[in-house]
Amino acid sequence: MSGDEYVYDEASGEWVPAAEAAASAGAADTVEVRDSVGNLLQDGDQVTLIKDLTVKGAGQTLKRGTLIKSIRLTGDAQEIDCKYEGIKGLVLRAEFVRKR
Image (cartoon, rainbow, N blue to C red; front, side):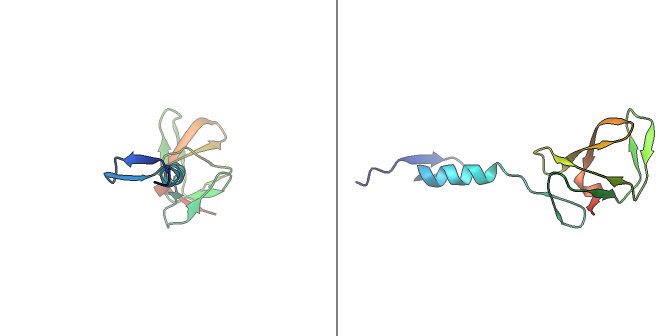
């Protein structure tokens, strides 16, 4: 007996070494966010809107081609948090932006 610890993985239904389970759990925490054409987005990137978007609650429409600076990832694969003048707490869907 080697003394390794094993953990039951509910997703696969198998017993796996604890070190392997910890490594796969760390990799699962990172979410890849991709724009409309498949480019990988990261915190601080600049994006351009590919479609006119009506902003609910602000009574404003963001036009196609609008540059959004310094985005932040939210942990959701389809949403990005960003700042735009006059709009607080703007969250955009990744499918409507393209990396600049």
